[in-house]
Each structure stands twice: as C-alpha cells, then as structure tokens.
Amino acid sequence: MSADHKTTCFTGLTVDHIQVYVSDIASKAQAFAGNYGLRPVGSARVPGTAHSYTLASSDILFVLTEPMTDDHPGSAYLEQHGEGVADIALGTDDARAAFHEAVRRGASPVAEPVEREGFVLASIMAFGDVVHTFVQRPTGAARHALPGFLPQTDLQASAELGLREVDHFAICVEAGQLDEVVRFYCDILDFSMIFEERIVVGTQAMNSKVVQSASGLVTLTVIEPDLSRDPGQIDSFLKNHGGAGVQHVAMATEDIVTSVGELVRRGVEFLSTPGTYYELLADRIEVSRHSVDELRGLNLLVDEDHEGQLFQVFARSTHPRGTYFFEVIERAGARTFGSGNIKALYEAVELHHEQARQREQEAQQSLLSHAEPQRPAGR
Image 1 (cartoon, one colour):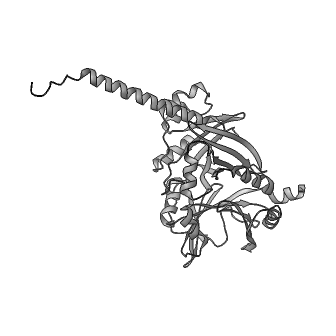
Image 2 (cartoon, one colour):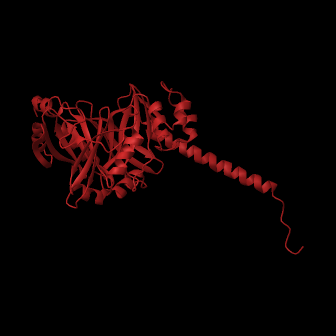
Image 3 (cartoon, rainbow, N blue to C red):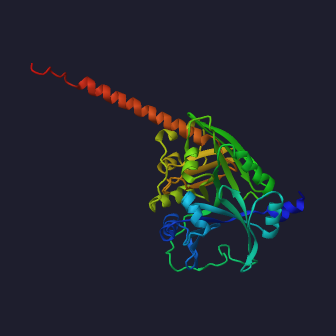
C-alpha cells in the first residue's frame, strides 16, 4: 500500500459519531441528557420509519434511533441484540477514497458512497453486526451537524459534565476471533496494536489487544474469552448480546472526581469497589492526582503505564440484558492501559470475601460461646 493511500484515507481518522439503536427513544434520550449531561442537538423524523436524536458533549456525538418498521435495519438489530451500538462512524477527509480503499483491501461493503447535504457517507462491515460509516463533513459544517437533522425542541438540556471525547470502545468477540479482528483494523484501516495482555482472574481468563488509528483518536480494546477456563463476564456478554459487539464506551474527562461526583448526584450508579482495594493501593502505586479518600468515595480505580496514570470507573449497566454500559476515564499522562486494575480489583475482592468469612466465623463462635446450654426436654 502506498504512503498516499495512508495519508489520504486513514491517517486522520476520528470518531465522528456513535449510532445507538433504542426501543424507547424518548426515555433513552432523556436519560442521556439528564443523567450524562449530553446536550440535545438535533432531531430527525421519517414518519412511519424511524425517529432519531443527536446528543453531544464537547467532541462526543451520539445518534439515538428508534426504528418504527420491521424492515428498518434497527429492528433486526434490536431483536438480536437489544439496545446497543450499531455504528462507530469514522470521520475522514475523503469518504469515497476511504471506502474504496478499504473494500480493495478486503472489507465488506455495506453502503456505497452517497452525498447528502454536502456530507459524503459510505459504510463497511466491522465486527459482528457493527459497521463503520466513513463521514466526510463539508467545509464549515458545525461539529454536531448531520444530514437530515433539524434543531430539536423536544428535550430539555442540562449542564454538561466535562465529558469531552470518546477515549475508547471495548469490544467483545467470540473465542478465536481476536486476532482476526485485530488484523482487520491493522490491514484494512492502518491501525496499530498498542497493547496486549492475558488476564487471569481466578479460574477465568481472557485475552485482550488494543488497536489504535494512525491519528491516535480511535481506540478499540478487543477482548475474547478463554474457553479452556471457566466462563466469565465476556462469555456472559456474548451469550446475552447474541454475539460480538460493543460492551462499553469510555468517555474521557479532565477531572474524573468532579464529573463522576455530578453523575452520582444525577442518579448514575457505578460499580462498587471494596474498601480493601484502597487499603492495598499504596503497595502498588503512588497516586499522582486526587486523594485516596476521593477515589474511595467515588469507587474510582487508578492504574498506570510508563507515561503516567489513568483513573477509571464503570457505570452499572441499566440494559435489560446487562450488556451495554459506560465508562468514565481520566488520563494523567497514561497513553495505554495499565494491567493492574483488573488483577488488583480481583485480589481486593478476594481479600474482602476472606475477611467477611473470618468475621462470620468469629461471630458464630461468639454466639456459641455465649449460648446457654439447652436442658433436655422433660427434665
């Protein structure tokens, strides 16, 4: 492949927007706006076919779509997977060239290039039922504009929470598909693999590789289960989702304590972290930003690579199938993903359980030692 192809087609890729199919757009859009501070921007209605909203925060742009007919592609998606990400749209300076070059390299075409209101759009298959739409924006177009959308007047906006960009997507794939998906991104879209690890959590295990675009602006963590070990959370996702898909979207903030504190105030629930995680924290890392008490109070995790630290927290899934959810992340210099969080959290959970078992045993012994001997009946 030529340097010109790389420069013209894939070097400047960005996350343009994220298409999510939903079954109740009114309630879902209100949750995105009210809970996560995503600003309602536009609305698109095709009577009897579909209703969509765009919601944004800084460089993040979601498109929520509720299909109204059985022949809309979103209907089949919802039937198979439930609500979830169907399209990770990629911004490019030349959508036609990107599409044709990707197909030439072996990508499966979904939609040929078409121009709408100055936008050029074209789509290829990515993984599972998820597609990538190449989006070429016309000169001078607003960042959150999309063809077919008009300014919306239905939804109330709430204050934004400092969520500024999509940091990464976590993708779950079937066992044996990890290398194939990584090759797709590296060979077709000129991504590079920047991180890999095998994660062993008790009797469970998973393999993970991170691929990133040449621009550094599109990052995907691809995870497959290890079928030689006990089933775990990746197996559960694949079963409940009905195949490969986006497990979560990580949104970046410059101050995770402030952002997550406000998210909690607005009713967003996050996964709990045992107190023992923070008791063990000093043994493995010296926190450079935020206090341990702040981390503990908001269940925030901290990890590091060779260039800095990162702070993470995972929202509790509200999906009926327990599949799709959000992550909030702050990078304090870290460019990849440290390998300590999952193992450290697992060890903390195990220690927490062991301490709970010890307390229960001590309580039972205390009850037995203070219990009065029972007299035999009839004596």
